[in-house]
Amino acid sequence: MVPRMLQLFLILHVLALPVQLCEIPRGNSALIKCLNTELLKLSQDLSEELNPSVYVALRLSADHSLKKEAQYLQRLRNVFQPSTSSSVAGGQQKQPNMGRLALYLLALRAACQDMETLLGRQLVTRLKYHLHKEKEQIAFKGSGRPITSYYQYSLGVLALCVHGKKIDPHVIQKLLNAEKHNKFAHGGKLSVDTTAMAGLAFACLEQANLYEPRLVAAISLAVQRVTDRILQAQTTTGTFGNIFSSPLAVQLLIATGMSKKPECPKGLDALLGSLEQGHFQNPMIMSQLLPVLDGKSYLDIAAMECRAERDTLELDTTCPGSRTVIPGTKMITVLLAVEHPPSPETLYNHSIQVPSGSSLLDVLRTAAEEGAGQFTFETQNTLHGPLLTTVMGLKASNGERRYWQLLQAPDSSLQKGISDYQPQDGESIILKCSPW
Image 1 (cartoon, rainbow, N blue to C red):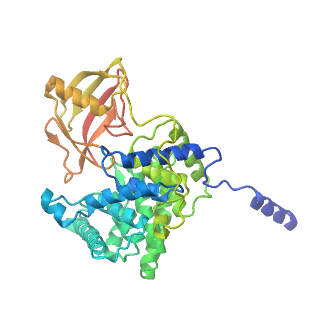
Image 2: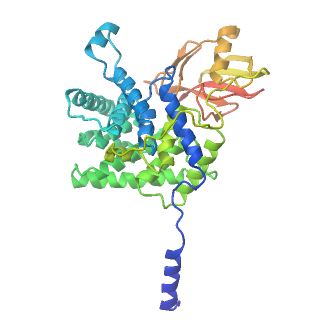
Image 3: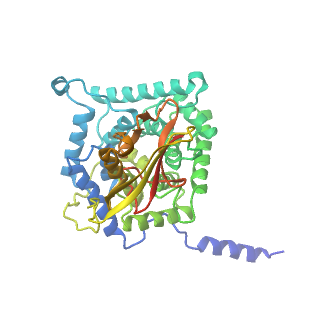
């Protein structure tokens, strides 16, 4: 039996050991500033699609270019809140989907905008209406699936929560049921992005002090289960799922006070390593990463006061690397195939030559232009980049829960989208219509 004094000594020794927090190691400030500058450049690039997530990241940063941020916010307003005169002049403007609207509301809170105006209340009402329709679809014939996805559903809940708006408990309950019954999956595997976004929504609701104790208790259990799943999803390299789903995962760990867990600094090291190697080129992922490097999450938006901010960020910061990829002069060959199960036949199978450094989107365009095998495809613009929706006239139906999966032969899913992934010489790419 261990003597009592020795037990006490061992306990004090353990308590005295240094705790590794989820904090940025010294010497990375220049790297973080470069990411901040790159996002600021994106906000000034008129050829880039407007993305409220970029604005949110800039606002959560420690350093600002307040004039340029204000200019970007005004451009966002022109799209999400067009004046009556501009709407009449330009015809009927298409309303943003729920995910974009939710991100815009996060942007408005990050700008400390008053939402008790007529326009502000209209935006909140519109998002609540979207969530109501999604809730109805989940309940319809026991489908258990929203119109869009549980990622967008969670984002909508989070956006209303950071504005301090009370959400219909039935809307919350549907998200709780989805978490309890493991609905946050894609292609049969845990979707780390969806799980992390739902976790952020639950964490915000838990802190809101707006709901009945029984509902809050259920939310607290969901927070615990979700964070456990995220921690279990960490790979040996430190990523959560893959490197591109890791920023949201680390945001969740920060938001839920899990920064003392060893998984958090390990994940942060993986993110910093990938950032240094130039792996982050997608604006959406970059904008989810920057708050993490400042030790923040989307929940920090709720407490922003927009006062005494450092107006020190400049565009002329010299940074290594660039988002612009210049194709090389060397030509490479990419094998492109199209599969549509349950048909046993390969609908398309040809070799395509493109300059080295070309994206998969460039490969698809070349295949369509050359006309070999009558290859055709269509895409849809999203904030994550162009999404492949139709191949050879076959549309991946959202109602049937199918999508065009990007595979490196024989069955390795690509971690990047068609505009970001750069195939190598001799690589075989399969476009496969798969369930999700």
